Amino acid sequence: MKSKHYDVFVIGSGIAGQTVAKLCSENGLSVAISDNRAFGGTCANRGCDPKKILLQFSDLAHKSNQLTGLGIKKAPKISWKDVQSFKKKFTKKIPKGTENSLSDLGISMYHQSPKFIANNKVEVEGKHVTADYFVIATGKIPRPLNIEGHKFLKVSDDVLNLKKVPKSAIFIGAGYIGLEFAYMLSVLGCKVTILQKDSEALSQFDSFLVEKLVKSLKTKGVEFIFNVDVKSIEKLKKNFKVNYDSEGTLKSIKSRQVFNTSGRIPAIEELDLSLASIEANDTGVEVDFYLQSTTNPLVYACGDVSSKSLPLTPLSGLQGYIVAHNIIKEKSKKFENPLVPSNVFTQPNLASVGYSESEAKKRYKNIKIYQGDVSHWFNAKKSNEDAYAYKILVNERTDEIVGAHILSPEANETINILTLAINNKITVSALKKHIFTYPSYTNDLKTMLKD
Ligand SMILES: Cc1cc2nc3c(=O)[nH]c(=O)nc-3n(C[C@H](O)[C@H](O)[C@H](O)COP(=O)(O)OP(=O)(O)OC[C@H]3O[C@@H](n4cnc5c(N)ncnc54)[C@H](O)[C@@H]3O)c2cc1C
Ligand SMILES: NC(=O)c1ccc[n+]([C@@H]2O[C@H](COP(=O)([O-])OP(=O)(O)OC[C@H]3O[C@@H](n4cnc5c(N)ncnc54)[C@H](O)[C@@H]3O)[C@@H](O)[C@H]2O)c1
Image 1: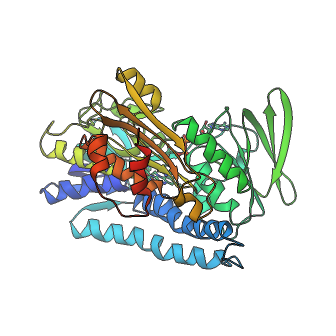
Image 2: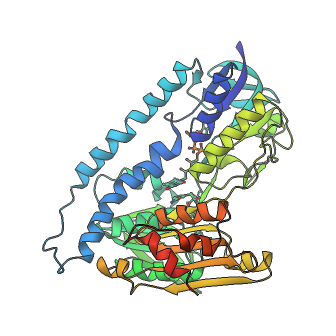
Image 3: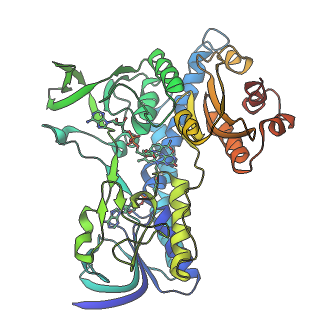
C-alpha cells in the first residue's frame, strides 16, 4: 500500500476544518483535508445558510399574514419551486468553491472517511497516511432514534430539500431545528405537529420567553404535544402514522412526513478512534483547553465534534483558529469559554446571551431582573405582532448586564448589541446614555432598562 506524510491531516471540511487547514497551510505547513460528503460543511451546504434563505420566504408570508386586513389585501403567492432554485444558486457553488480555495493554497484533498489504524496513522483512499498532527473536525449528525420504523424518518437535510411544502408534518423534538422548521412550514400552509419528550421546548432558553414563543407558534398553527415517548412509525398509503405514549396512554397521529429533530451527536463512528487511543463520548472528542485530545497529544478536535464546543458556527470557526495556532506554536492559545449569543430563527426570534436567571443568581449576590411582556409597545403593535418580551439580568453591585434574553421579531440583531455591552462591561447607566435610531428594537432596550 502507498504511503504519504503531511505535517497536518484535517478530517472534515466545515468551518472548523477549513479554518485549521488554511491557517496551517498559510504558515508553511504541508496540509491534507478529507471529507466524506460534499466539501464545505454543514452550515453552508445544509444548515444555517440555506435555512435562512428558505426562512425569509416564511418571514414574508408571516409579515403579510399579520397585516392582512390592515393594508394587505392578498397574501403574496410563494412558489416553493422557485424558492428552492434560488437556494440552490447559493448551495450549488459551495463544494467546488471550497475545493478551489483549498487547492489554491496547495492543500491536498481526500474524498473519503479516513480510519485510524495507529496513533499517528490513518488509512484513506487506499493509502497509509501519517501526519505530525491530526485534526478531527467532523461536526455532528442527527441523533438516530432507535424505534420501530425509524427508516421512515427524515432529517434536517430533507426539510431543506423538500420539493413541495407537505400538507402535514410531524417533528420529533422541540429544539432549535424542530422549532425553526415547524415555523417555516406552518406559515406556508403545512399542518405541523411537534412531539416533545418532556414538558418544555428549547430547554436551554428562558422559560418565561419560551412559553410566549410556544403560544405565538400555536397561533400560527403549530400543535405541540409534550411529555411523549415516541414508540414506532408505520407507513400508510399516503401518510405515516406515529405511535406514541402520552402519560400512560398509547396514541397515534398521522402526517405526510415525519422529521427526526431530536438532537445531534458527534460524527465519529467511522473514524475508529479507539485504534488511535482517542477518547470520545456523547459530547464529542475529549479535549483540553488547547483543544488537544486528552489521550493522544498528536490529535486535536475542534468545532461541533469537540467536547468543548457548543454546536454553533461562530464557535466552530473560533475553535479552528485556536487549533491552527496551537499546531503552529504549541499551547499558544486557549479556548476560554467566550460569550456566545444564539438565536432561534422563528418569528418572533428568541435570542439569548450570557447567564440564565438561575446561573446569574448562583454567581452574583444581588441580581436585578428587568423583565416584561411588551407586546403592547409601538414596535410590536405597528406590525401587529403578538409577542414581544424580555428578561435582562444585571449585577446590582457593578450595574453591568450579565445575561440578556429577548423575544422579538428582530432579536437576532438586538442580541448583538447586548453581547457588545456584556463583553465591554458597559453599565446600564452608560448604555442608556447612547442615542440609538428611532423607532428601533435597539432603542427599546433603554426603556426595558428603566427602573
Ligand atoms: C439545520 C441546521 C441549521 C443550523 N443553523 C444554525 C444557525 O442558524 N446558526 C449557527 O450558528 N449554527 C447553526 N447550525 C449549526 C452549525 O451548522 C454548526 O455548528 C457548524 O456547521 C459546525 O461546523 P463544523 O465545522 O464544526 O462542522 P460541520 O460543518 O458539520 O463540518 C464537518 C464536516 O466533516 C465531514 N465529516 C463527517 N464525518 C466525516 C468522516 N468520517 N470523514 C470525513 N469527513 C467527515 C462532514 O461531511 C462535514 O463536511 C445549524 C445546523 C443545522 C443542522
Ligand atoms: N439558530 C441556530 O443557531 C441553530 C439552528 C439549528 C441548530 N443549531 C445548533 O444545532 C444543535 C442541534 O439542534 P437540534 O434542534 O437538533 O437539537 P436540540 O438539542 O436543540 O433539540 C432536540 C430536542 O429534541 C428533544 N428530544 C430528544 N429526544 C427526543 C425524543 N426521543 N422524542 C421527542 N423529543 C426528543 C429534546 O428534548 C430537545 O428539545 C443546537 O443545539 C444548536 O446549537 C443552531
